[in-house]
Image (cartoon, rainbow, N blue to C red):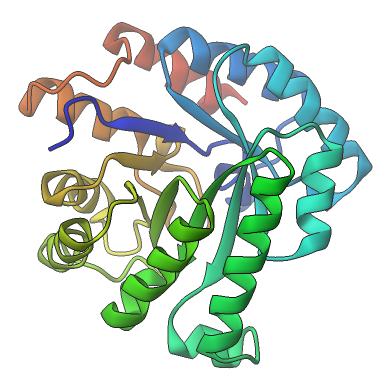
Length: 265
């Protein structure tokens, strides 16, 4: 397990995809302040491509976060990246489907197109002075050989981290260990795990990912997120610090107040 796992909070992005969840501007500012105070390492703060108001708010949130990396989420599209640049983003997450089913049915493309776009747009972001994280959407159902290929392509183009997303929440801890362990043994690029909780395994899967070689975990307060939600930040942090005796840089005493804040919102 990595000495100090990186906790990436995506409550402001994926958490807001939960049914009925829509934070106000002030709530988002308060949440950023609470996350920073609690010691959360990185914040995924929004999707600038959603429009001018979102871009203005992202810039405000990033300023509020101080020296904490504030990540802008993007599809693998030039227009999304330009929107993030306009919002003042310095770190961008580029997400693209990597399973054959999603490549063919969602993108109506093929593997070679995915590889070309990943290489070209990652390099473009680097040329613009941006730090880049690559998000492998539906990685849990992807061909392991293709996962290796796209990770190597992104890293060569300048990506700093690979997010493996269990987009449909269909993995078990053993499956996560196999996927992450195999990639970690072959790649130089650090791995982040983004789990969904459709079968109630998101926290267990996140622990398995870290034990297999992942260096970062994507999670949300209260496990908020689309469908059954994501790995709960308070669960993975407490499990790591109490059960595994692994420091995360997060203050456990801050977690009840942080959870209550989001619950009240």
